[in-house]
Image 1: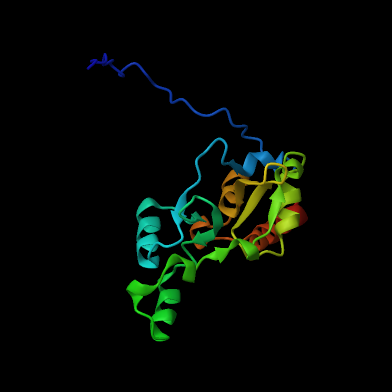
Image 2: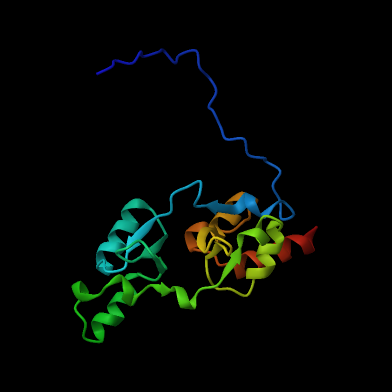
Length: 191
């Protein structure tokens, strides 16, 4: 076992910060709002997990979206905390199902219902291109695929766009891409 040295911090005033441009705007590279799974491990959950357990785990870890996989680790779809909202569970219980019987698969968005942006196109795009592409979407996330490698490469989150662009939208209200597009149009009209 090795003992590490401890140093005094009383003469340290600054914090290390990532090298991120403070001048990101709607015309900046779309990569600025892209979560790349080759750089950051995605949050995954197995499809056969009880829905109440998934909801609890997501609330506890402050995660709003998980990638759903099967037992072999293959991509099956997405689940958001909003999809698992207690009211949705109550509807299922009212239909005669026991809360403990409900599985993640009862609430998730399966991959056959999802659309994605190709990574090759994304790296050539601007943030405004992403917003325009997704402006009719009520969703809060968009997958990015690498068509050549046949993998889910990452995702774009509406909340990440709001935070990066410092838009006057409350991220706690789970904004959609449509709301972002409306907000951007208002900002463009005001300037």
